[in-house]
Image (tube, rainbow, N blue to C red; front, side):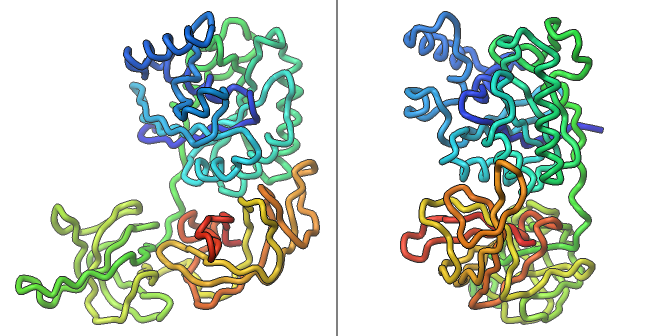
Amino acid sequence: MPGGLLRVVTAGSVDDGKSTLVGRLLHDAKAVLADQMTAVEVASERRGYEGADLALLVDGLRAEREQGITIDVAYRYFATANRTFILADTPGHVQYTRNTVTGASTADVAVILVDARTGVVEQTKRHLAVMSLLRVSQIALAVNKMDLVDYDEAVFDRIVTDFAAAAASLEVDHFTPIPIAALSGDNVVDRSERMAWYGGKSLLEYLEGLEIADEPDLPARFPVQVVIRPRTAEHPDYRGYAGRVEAGILRKGDAVSVLPSGRRSTVTGIDTPDGELSEARAGRSVTVRLADDIDIARGDLIAGIGDPEPASTRELSATLCWLTDKPLRAADRFRLRHTTRDVRAVVDAVESRLDIASVSPMPADELGLNDIGRVRIRLAEPIVVDSYAINRSTGAFLLVDETSGATVAAGLVR
């Protein structure tokens, strides 16, 4: 049955109405406090609006309020009688694609907005590509501002057809189209009487009823963040490995492999500040004790025994989203950060770049700002990875500029 926590990301081009949609969703779902609404009404009146600008419920940065655009990822938490939501409203401007990647990286479902007047544009395709690459499992196409095209069904159908063509090129096998008018609330929380030709659910009904597929049944993945050795009179021989379970379930008594060394041992204890556990599921931060005295350091991976096994490698074939102005070329050097490991890396080759207009890969020898492309990377030391298609945590990494420390790319292991 549907229910529980749902992580939602909204994306769309500039002025497609993302913040207004999120504000309307919060307002009509009764998730806005009275003092928040009063502040929005006062701010709206000061700016000369006839009614409350619900986008102000979301646009929190001063620069965003002044410009009327979203720059940062705005996170909102709310709940209905049926479900709890974490909602990330991401920027529409091309130069803030990095923020869209951030918001989508943990999402269960993406709501991609399209302005009914302009239809599918290049930024729509870019956002769809990001969702496809990050393997966001569910996508809703929200065709907004239907009130500005007289609620015309033909306009909606044309946009759905164009979006479907782009989705097929990116191997997105399904999406749910919903016609909405966020400003007036049509089909956001309640179904609209103005679009009787639409027989589907409102956006909130869709989100409340969404069933999210379980993660693949992987053996446990536990990247070691820190080795704990208090060496006190009370705990003279204690040795534990602290971190977060990134996949599967780690149980007391499990046989495990310590990678990249390949040494095997058994879990003898799983500790937390509140006491010992018999098991720890994905997302739980714990300290693990092993039966054998093995040389383990930060960045090593404690993995459950089973199929598929993670690969220890010094060469990666990966998809990158390039996030900085300086182009990426072969022979460029970086620090690669993967789970808790940090190693030096060099780009062996740039193989291709996704052409947003045609939504297909094109030969390329460099990647520019916001480009998405395929590369080969060589590492100074081995890291232990899964394919991103198998696990979103152990299959993802960042490239960091060695001089400035700035993150320049988000990468997915292929």
